[in-house]
Amino acid sequence: MSKVSHQTMTSHYSLLLILAVASVISPATSLTCSTQNVLSSDKTPFQTCLDLPELESYLHYTYDATNSSLSVAFVATPSRSDGWIAWAINPTATTMSGSQTFLAYRSGAGEAPVVKTYNISGNNLSEGRLAFEFWNLRVEALNGGRIAIFTTVKVPAGDGSVNQVWQVGGNVTNGRVGVHPFSPPNLNSRAVLNLTGTTSTGGGGGGSKTPGNAGWMITNVNLGVNLGILVLLGAIFIF
Image (cartoon, rainbow, N blue to C red):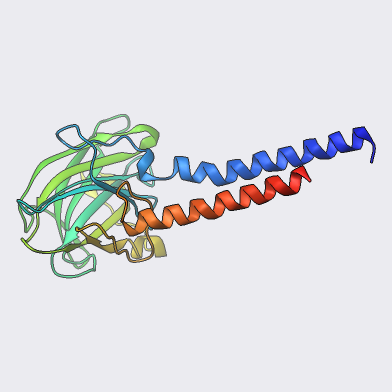
């Protein structure tokens, strides 16, 4: 093989290796909750974060067993500029009906988001009081059009899990909240949130900042496989 041909093949393999590295690293660095700088009301990181399995949404949370409280930050991007996002706890079921909901939206283009509480009964969305105590409710606009809902809720003492529901909805017109799409991701955006370190979800989980969490283990297994592929590719390209 001539020197020129060898150099050409080396350059070609190097380009393939760079593309392989980019495809492996990019999702891990840009689409996980651990890359988000989201802090609790006392300006400290949450104990755990999850990449929720539907609607490109994320949950940061801290459970305090001493006072049976759950502090959360739910992060998602509205599907449209006048759309809404929501995170809820359903005290009685894993369905949307009966959910006690925190819902946020922008009241106009360029406006700061607002957050309100809603009680969901069937397909009816009624603004009002929730069935449990909550405090420190606030909302923030983040980069990339994302919105973060922050709150701390009282959960029953001794309960090891809660039923969570999250959603990305349609438009908001004069304060009236439109319905969300009925596509599979919207219909499957619910899960059981375990409060004691291991997370069960309705359709698979994502990353976590807490070692021992099921999502954290999945992330590391995937990372190990990806690194193994890169090593193999590097060996092939060199020889």
